[in-house]
Length: 318
Ligand code: UDP
Ligand code: MG
Image (cartoon, rainbow, N blue to C red; front, side, top):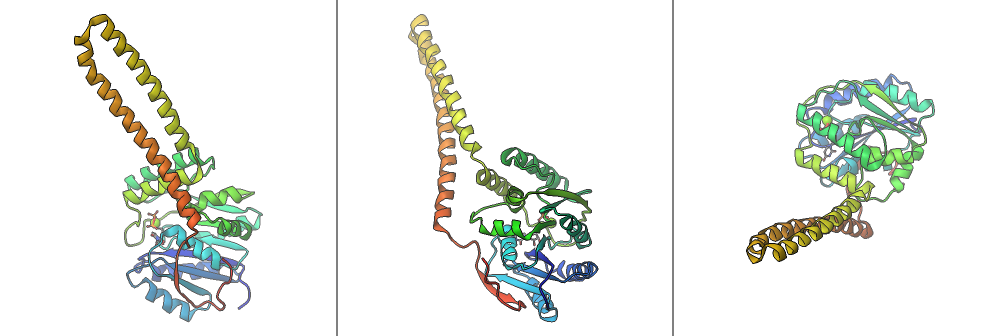
């Protein structure tokens, strides 16, 4: 098999119910594009039969490679592992749950042929729970504000990248990151195409409420330092307010005598406690950034690969 013209990277975490159909539809859709391709599945520590299904597929079809993690490292780590193994000039990421139809890959690839570095996709009709949709809308808004990168749909992982962008991504040794935003920072020409969106074929979304909150927090703190500035500003306002409160309390004490001042003690307490709260908040936030620096300087690997199945040559890049 020669060099592929297209690499497709699919992160997989407990998707045994979706994999058979995904394999069938994805391979058919890619064959219809009439160019050599490879598919890289990254098994992100699934505890179900996902690995067994993928192993069978990779053994039967040389175009399929499976990278098996030794545990669950998260979707973005999985995509990175796929990026590092990908060999083609155009690389497409796709979710395993069939929410992004593989038949749409052709549209994205056509856009990269036109010279776009990154091609995103916008889910025209989203089939997710109302809560999931609202959460995503919030994430989209806040992300646009915090990162300054305008994307209409950050969550949609059906995306195509030119090799240069993926190489820049692989060189970014950030421990915690969010691929669509990072990619847009390195991309010269970006576009988006509308794609259909289906109900999750089977299984449950791997993102719980807390996982989403964590993702959002990661996103804000890894791409901007404005939370630090916000904390500082808040601290400043608080300091000014408590100064004014103190002046009022002292004046009241002088004018109305000590009775007034004694009940004023509670006001002081209230102000004091609020202030302590703000201080703790600022401290915690700084700690978060310091923690990140600590994580970063340790240079830990993002994931551990247990096995690579079906690759002709182990990829030396990384
Ligand atoms: N995924 C993964 N590791 C995880 C969570 C998810 O590899 O820890 C994969 C999952 O198998 C799927 C994709 O990432 O292919 C998107 O996950 P999901 O569909 O649960 O996310 P949602 O559609 O709810 O955003
Ligand atoms: Mg999904």
